Structures are given as structure tokens and as C-alpha cells.
Image 1: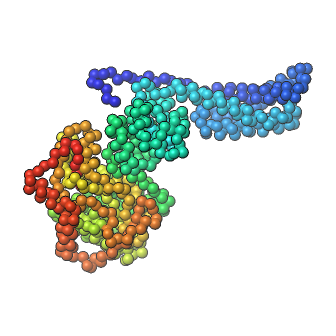
Image 2: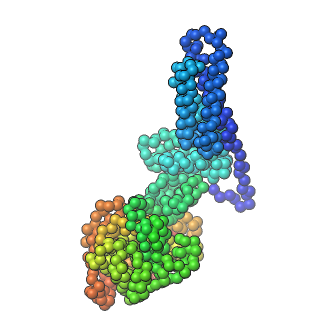
Length: 635
């Protein structure tokens, strides 16, 4: 909740709690042995109705001697395994294992002494271990409960429902409840597993499923909902956000698995849900063994390494320990940024940074002969559809001939594995961009027939956060006060975050079949109008939205597959594959290619139900202003 202007924000006071001191643990365990031996011995005599009044002195002496032996063994063993050196969290499972092992060892030695000397009744042996361990564990659990009861969130903490009663939820609720400075105070769990209904986790009940989210928020007075699920996609988040947004409740998520690899997720890493989460959060399932198998210890080269996709590919590949990683680009500033992000320096005087242009075949051949790459990821390309509609020659030089140059250089040095980065616009292309990338796929299929290595293409839709992509453009327009420019009220696009797309690209390289195109599962297409609406609502501003109409060559709805492609998905649940008709370089000619691209572009414009939008809007001099209601972006 927002504090009123001028209001003083209360400073939470941290209540310090003393840790469980080592001497207290030793005293507790020694006392446990004394109580155990005394109670069991006396009880044995009483139950047997044996008169021992005359021998009480001997009984007490024997119990005392055995207790001293148990204390000595317990203390020596406890210091050896770190039990009394604060190496374990009090009351934790780790401490319980060590404590049980130590108590068992002491019991075995005491039992041997009792059997040899008959100092106390031998029947006592059977109950020594469970009773001593029970007392030791009970004291620790009580101490832990007292400490955690004193370290609760302050009164200023926001009541929150936790969505997900699994391992992550268990960890989060404990961290929240023992932290006096926690911003959130958990009040209950939500979980869609019917078997967890009424389940109690760290003192909190599972109150119901996500279908009752609105009801449970009202019932508990929650002001926030925290997603405590390890794997969530954008569709699920959008559904939950629709409910929380209508109730005026915050929705918080943890970093994705990519961010979590660099730092442990805990309650302090929570953040408010972003548009990136709602549009493109698609967790990837990576087979680490297969990926490591073709990257670890290999010389890997990435073209377009200064771009958004290429740079993230380099970061992903670097995790798998290649022998050498070569980052190739003609953008020296991009290479500088990528090198800093991976190696922590931007010296640009090392062998890994390669300044070269894929449109220069001789220069590219020299680089490949010198570096001798074994794996190549080809990400260099021109990608802005409207720009390439104006300058198709540039698309031909870079996306077609540039790809051919990289393929020829790879074939010349015997590259083992080649992965061409394509786009969904190559499926039944209607633009110069799509047509050029489709030709790159066909050339890759041709190369697969020439060499002994594996040559595949990987196709996916829009990525969030890339330079010139939709979200940064919208954000800049909103910050300037608008208008937000959109193309058509019904246009949809597929979205994925850059790290998640690159993870699947790397996986596709491991399972790709020679000459085929691998198609990444992008989830459900997203209406751009909904994205624009959410971004404006989340900004809190009143921003005008203007429809500009579909541009030449743009589709109303993108396709990941061509209508003629026979798609299969036998190797990975998120990656499909389809054969690609090869195209020989000897058949390449610019004029026929351009004519075909133009014909496709014109056909695509008519078939998307949006070819006349721009003309109709400009003809009527009509601008639709929705003030944050509904719109669609440049994509």
C-alpha cells in the first residue's frame, strides 16, 4: 500500500534472539542420558516389584557411572561431527540425522558395558536409544519454536496468500515467518492439487484452489498473492493477474529459473509481476546431459554475438564449459558489451572477440580457418520487417547470401553441428524478411547434404527484450505520455523471453535431425491489444492508443508451421521438427527471389484481413483513441 505524502514510515525493530549455544546442546544431551538411565532403571525395579532399598547406593552409583560414560562419549562424538560447533541449524533434518547417528553409537557402547558388567538390568538396553533421542530432539524443537515465535513479521507486514504448497512454498513461508523485517505476513496457502486440501504447512493451511482465489483474498484480507510455483507459464500468470488486478491486490513472482541459476531464490528476491512474465514466461525443460555432450570441451562460434539473441546464446553456451567460445559480429560495441557480460572485461584484444561481417565471404573463410570451430550458432541477421520491405537488397545480402557464406565456411572446416536461427515469419512467408529467412532454412537443408556434420534450423516467434521489440517501444511511448502506436485491434503474436528461447535453441541443437527445421513451442499467441492495455494500466497513466494499420507484408496472425510441413515432436515436449526442401546455391538469383517475395507479400496483405486497414483509416482521417482500453502495437 502507498503511504500518504508526509507520513512517517515506521522503522521495524529487529528483535534479537540468542542462538542455541553449544554448551546448551551438550547440557541438554547429557541430561537426556541421565534421565533416560535413571528412569528406565528405577522403573525396571518397580515394575518387577523387587526390593532394592538396601542396594539403592549401588544402583545410583552404577547409573551415575554409566551417565558419565554416556556424557563423555556424547561430547567427544558431538565435537568430532560438529554437533556442538554450530554447524547445523537447530531442529533441522540435518541435525536430526547427526544426533540420531551419535545417540545410536553411544547406545551400542553402553549396551556392551551393561551386558559385560550387569551394572543395571539388561532389559533397559532396549529402551535407551529411543528415549534419549526423544528427549534430545524434543528440547531442540521447543527451542526452535520459541525462537521462530519471537521472530515474526511486524505489524506493518502485508498479509499475503501463497499460491503453491510445494517445496518452494514451504521454504518461502518459513523465511517470511522468521524474518521480523519481512514485507509480507503469510496467512494461508492456495494449491490446485485436490489432495492438498486442508494440508498444513509450517502452521498454515491450504485454504482452497485457484478457482476460489477471489473468495479467499476477501476472506483472509490479503493484500498480495505470491506465486510459489517452480514452473509457471504466461497463460497461468495472466489468469491469476486478471483476478488480482480486479481486486486491487499485488501479484508477486520469483525470478525465472535463468535468474535463479545465479542466485538462490528466497523471500527477499520476490518482485511484482511484470509484463514480461504475463506475456513470455515459458519455462524450458533442458536435458543437461545432451546439451553438455555437444558443447563441453568444444570450440563454439556464434555469429551476431553482439545482438540480443546472439549475446544471450553466448552466455548460455559459456555455462557448459566449451573449450573456446568465439563471438563474431561486425558491431564492435555489441561485442564489447557481450564480452563484459561473460568474462567481466571488455578488452576486445582476445581471440574470443571476432570482428567480421558475414557478407564478406573471404574474411569469413579466414576466421573459420584460424578458429576451427566445431559448433556454430548462426544468429546474425536483419530482422525489422518494415525496413526490409523498403530495402529488400539488404535482406538478400545478409539473410540469404550472408547465411550461405557462413554455411560454406562451416563446410570448409568440417563443423560438427550447425544451428541456424530462424523466425516464425519463415512459415508461409508474406514479407521480404520471412522470405529471406525461409531461403536461409532451405540453404541450411542443402548444407546438411554436403558435409558430415549436422545442420539444422530453429524457428521461433518474437522475443521480449530484444532491441526494437514491442515492450521497450511501448514503454518508451508510455513514458513520453503517448500515443502508443498499434497496428490492428486483432493482431496476435507469439512471445518468449530471450533466455528461455536461447535455452531451447541450445537444446534443439542437441536433438535436431540433419536438414530439418526445429520449431519451438511458444505457447498460445497473445493479443497485442491486451499487452498494450496491461502496460498502460500498470503504468497508472492515461495514454492515448492509435491504430496505424498493418504494414506491408505483415500478417494478422503469425504461424510457427507452414501448412505443407509435416510436423513431428518425438524428442522434446517443447520442440517439434519438420523437413525442409533444400535450395542449391547454384539456383540462387536475386530478381526471381525478389519477385517471389513481393508476390507473397501482396498475397499476405490481402489474406490477413488487414490489408486495407491503413488505407481505410487514413482515407477517413480516423484515429481511434481508446485511452488505455484496447490497442495493438508495432511488431
